Every structure is written in structure tokens, then in C-alpha cells.
Length: 478
Picture 1: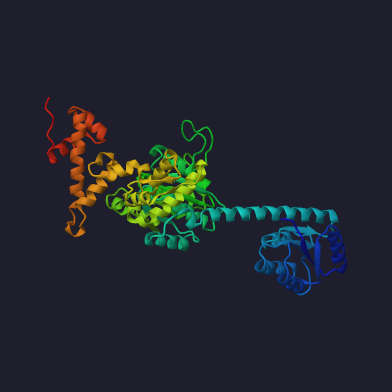
Picture 2: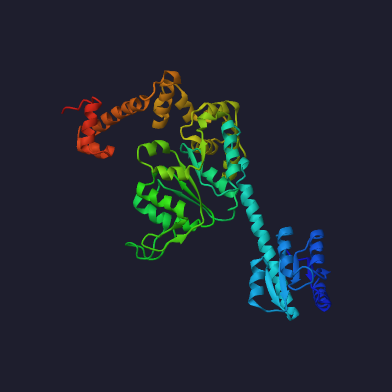
């Protein structure tokens, strides 16, 4: 973005004349002001790309004018000129927002250099602004988070309210419901736009490595630490860190996360220096953290620190009216990614997709649509292009369902009437009915070897023996 219009404000007529002549010779439009009040009037009435302001003028000084300029036109580049080359003036000018500071007398080559420098800075500022707008446009809610159901409209409202602030947000929902998309939408609609968004899946990293991933480490902190490494919190400085599946974080590490939230500083592994960090935290989990707090598996104080603003994402099966919108979105997106002609779904296919329970939520729907686009040669996808769904929804085809899908269907069948469910016994009853066939199956596969069965189940042998007795499991006799 080049410079066109320049304002020169100086009480010395000779300085105004010299600067205007030199700048007009270069092709710039130049306007002149004798004092600060006249300069302010012109700035209010016209649009300038650069203002050259003398620091000492009658009525309003250049520094006072600079303050008013920043109120009226924060994007205007201002260069302060003065005959008094004092450090105090230079520091004060830059502190108040001046782009540069020139000491009189100066030759015209200095002005040329300053104008060129401002021109480059304006170009860079313009590019950054465009990038921010592109990012913001990319993460506009209606373009990335699809749905018009009442539940999703409430989510949109909450994002709109919390995004501009730095408040901590806890996103809760089943796997595949789009928790990271919500976190990104919060970041890209906040004042931290243009700063880093750093995601970390706490469940995907081994517990012994998670701390150094979060906080980094110093050289020599442990075997293999041949150089210093910055952790996710430092990488996210100025931006947002997204802690996905935080419910899987070990208790000792939860205490350190709590300290970061309270003190806004971290300490690298193997280091002893506190490092300040300016980071917004958005956390997510597919677990019931209240239940985890009750079971002493999650710190209560950390839970309340994270749960300042909760956002709950309902599973796709509870907002089926959004499925046709999601299908159309994924068809457009996937066809573009695969560079194939645009495809669409028949009414029967839409009905099939809408009626399916989607235990894997939006992620499963996207993968299903992608599979249909790839395997079908026709521009119109019909119900038969999704044979897996037809099998899973047909009677007698339960073997096609995932374990989670089977449990989901069975629970819905058993407890279709909430009024028939008695308080306090459902959790234990369901666990017992799942545990019994699981332990029986593993014992059969290990030919009754309890040591091996306990190892496979991830429990100790005494616990296994106790459960065999409690659940009335008959042991195989060789």
C-alpha cells in the first residue's frame, strides 16, 4: 500500500516550504498546517497516509497532537520532528505511538528514507490485516461449524459472548463432536487472532512425556535432551493453547496446570527459572469431569478454574436435523479436496444418513461421506452407496455395529422410558452386565489362565479373582 497523501505541520514557514517542495517533486499530495489545531482539523476532515509533525508548535504541541491523532486515526503513521535532540523527547514520542523521530536539521535524503520506510510498513500492515481477515473468514462459525439446531444456536451464542475476552473455556462432548473446531472458532474470533493456536491431545502422549511437551525442557534435563526445547505453553505465548482430552491428564500434572492458570508462568523441565506466559486456555474432554472429581481422578480446584465458561456439544444423534446440512457441507468439501465433480445425495440416502445413530458423531459422518464419494462412480449417491449403515440399522445385523454402537442401541432399548429408571442402580447394573461377558470372554481365550487374563484386562490377579466370585463366573475345567 503506497503513500499518496502527506500532512506537514510546522510553525516554521521555511520548513513547510522545503518539505512540501521536496515531497511534491516526488509525486505526493502535500497539505500544510501552521500549528497543532489546524493540523488536527485537517486530519479530521481528510485522509492522510503520513503526518510529519513538529514537536514545538503554538497552541498544541506535536506530542499533544500525536495523542489526539491516535484517538482520531489510529492507523495514521506519524513522524515527529524536533530541533531538541533529547532522549526524553525521543522516548516520549515513541511511547505515545510515533512511528519515527527526526532531529532537525536533516537533509532531504533522510525524509526520502523515512517515506520509503513508512511505505513498506504500510504494505506489511495491510498484508497482516488481509491475513487476519482471511483467517477470521475461514473460521466464521457458519462456514466451519455446521448446524442450525437449537443446541448449536446456543453454542454459537456462547462463542460470540466469550471469544472477545480471555476467559477460560471448557468444551465438553463425545469424541467426534467437533470440540477442536469450537476452540479454533473462539481463537479466530478473539483479539488473539494472528497469534499462535497450539493444540495438544493430552490422551495421545505418554504420561512420562506429557510434562516436557507442555512446559519444554532445558539442555541436559534428561538423557537425550541435547538442546533446549520450548513447550506448548511457550509456543502459544500471546495466543491460545487447546488442551484436548484434559480428563486423561495425570493428577500430578494437573497441579502444575493449575499453577500456570493462577500464576501465568511456567518452569521448563530441568530448569529453575519461572517464565511468564500470556496464554488463553481452552480445554476439552469427552468425560464427565464432575464424576471424575467425585472419584478423586480429577482435581476439584482445577475443574473450577477450567469450567469458567462451559460449552456442551450434544452428540449428532440428538441433533439429527443438522445431518442434511452436514452431508451437503462434507460433499462440497470432499469433492473439492479430491478434485472430482460435485456429487449429491438422493432423498433415500439423506433419510438413511439422518436416521442412523452416529456413535462416532461428525467424524464418523465425514468418513462415511468420503467413502461414498470415493467408491461410487455416479454423481448421485443413493442409499446403496452406504451399505454399512443399512446393515447396522437392519434387524439381525448387530454384528456390523461397533461395540459402542451396540451398547448405545441396547441402552436406548432397555431405558427408553426414563420414568422406569430407578435412581442409584443403573450405573452398577450396566457395569455388571458388561463386565461379566468381558471377563468370561477373556478367560475363555486364555483357557482359564487367570494371570494372563488379568494382564490382558489391565487389573491385578486378586481383583480378577474377586470379580469372578462377585459376578458368579464359572471357571472352565480342563
